[in-house]
Length: 305
Image 1 (cartoon, rainbow, N blue to C red):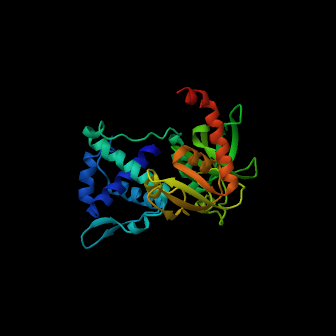
Image 2: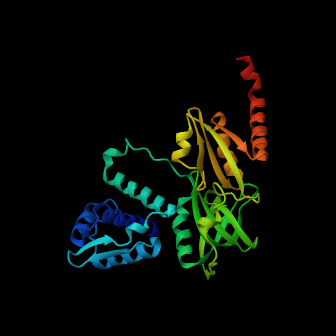
Image 3: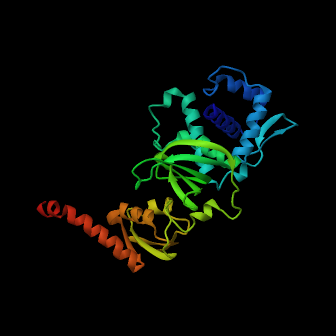
């Protein structure tokens, strides 16, 4: 199965990366004891060669052999940084492999579940690799029933425990965002599409926080964060443009250059009394109205106490 092959690719990558370099003989020995070797078969030379080729094609990671030592290593390891989706997949699945091989740690390490339909990821990634069109049965939040639609998968993105698919819709004649947990089925079609040369997945979201785009103009946003929570904002930046432009014992001011979309506003609200919007005035008023509406719902309880 494709899912099982995917797990084996991760195991092979993770093992080589952990050891830095390793001979095929040692790899085969570790394979014999690995949890991904559920069939109990030895790692054949041809199978190893196929895995190595598929890893390069899927992850753009090249495994080479040092002929002086007969050890295999990751040739372009310095290039692994900077691809957030690939890093997330490798890190998460590598940890899962470690947990499977260390059963005693299962009750000591708690992983956050990603409830989205990860069962479709293999099909989606395969279609992205080969530029195959997809037929998905999809039901958006505003839709009353599932609808079959043909799409061209451009990119996938993980945000807030949800997988999103960015694709061109033949029905809407434009790029649309699809939540994988709203997909009932995925069929890979034989028909291929031409990937636009000017599409850049990172650039597509560059001016936004999260996944929902906005038609608002790019703006300078200033957030005042109290001293108790500013370290959280420092270590987990809300946006790549984040800059701390003022700080004292009581608070810090962070600057952003982006389009304030729905996801960004929800993130601000989630901080409640820890964050204050200073600029722009339009965003300050909008967040203020939302906070006021929330207060009105709880006003009687607050006053009575």
